Amino acid sequence: MKKDDPCGRLIHGLSRRSLLQSSAVLLSMPLIAKATSVWAQEKLAGSGEVVVFSYGGSYSKGIRERVYDPFTKATGINVIDVVADIAEPQVRAMTSAGRIDWDLALIDGQNYPAMHDAGMFMPIDYRLWDDEALKGVPDVARRQDAVVAFGSTTLLAYDERALPKGGPKNWADFWNADEFPGPRGLSSVARHMVLALAADGMPNADRWPLTDDKVDRALKKLDEIRPHITKWWKAGGEPVQALLNGEFVMTSCYDGRAISAIRQGAPIRMVWSGANLVYVYWTVLKGGPNNENAQKLVAFLNRAQNAAGFTLATNLTGPNVNQLQHLPGDLVPLLSITPENASQVVVQDDTWLGAKRPDGKTNADHIQERWLAWRAQ
Image (cartoon, rainbow, N blue to C red; front, side, top):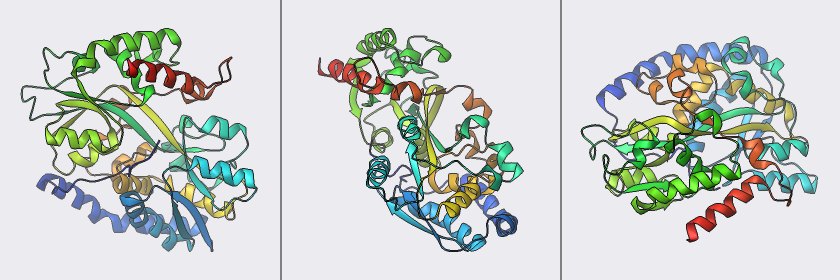
């Protein structure tokens, strides 16, 4: 899946309220930077470089300004970023060739299990992490050889201009075209059919794994809404732009895209109920030229102040919940790690998606075939 500049921004001005809130945080940044610098110099000081995979675009620009440059200033280690659409094919090719040119890569949760089993990653050195980071990053986000970089959530978003009396509150409302009329959009990604299960009343805890009976139920539910879907979108920027242009009144949407638009004044509202959460992991590549420096960057990224910097730079949310106290007040309610939002989302079962079926295909391949057959009808 192409990562289509995951933190793409719109050309709108910030509201006065957002600007004031952001300014308050920026005023506190010198103190935060000073404390971070002292900690990093004591524990993470080094030399040389670390080579890191990057998505490019505004993601690379933002993370360099708010995270990588401060890391270099604090530790003496230069960050070299290499840009590609996705990291997995390059990591597999380098591993096969026996020459690893990168140190740190972002690996999609669906691809992680097989690459973990193949021994492609170094254990994360949690001894470099300070106590705050270990407490702020939940155990579920800290694997033996990977740590969550960010969560990407597919949720319901709507145009409040088109629904001035109130918009949908859940996926059942999305399916209710009588009460909430207007054109809709849905993702073309097969695994997002789980959103139809939410519309059909299936409890969040029962959605995964997406067994054949659940696929049947999801596709039957999708038959109901299909006449109202004007576009099955592919690129991450499409749903937000379609909402702004009046092409959709509501759509599924990536949270990072919606957050970027909302913070710049777009009349879009997010609905977290039944959303699908996917994790993307930082991994230190086994055999990389600068493994020690990669471990230090991972430790630096997961400290609360730097996690906040990552979120501000990318509109993608890392797992450290302590970052919330370092972020603007208008941003905090929009993030997946707040207790209210986190309680409503469903974490995708990546282990099941990557598992092999009796015919040798993965479950992800199987549901893709079912999805394409339904789309072709």
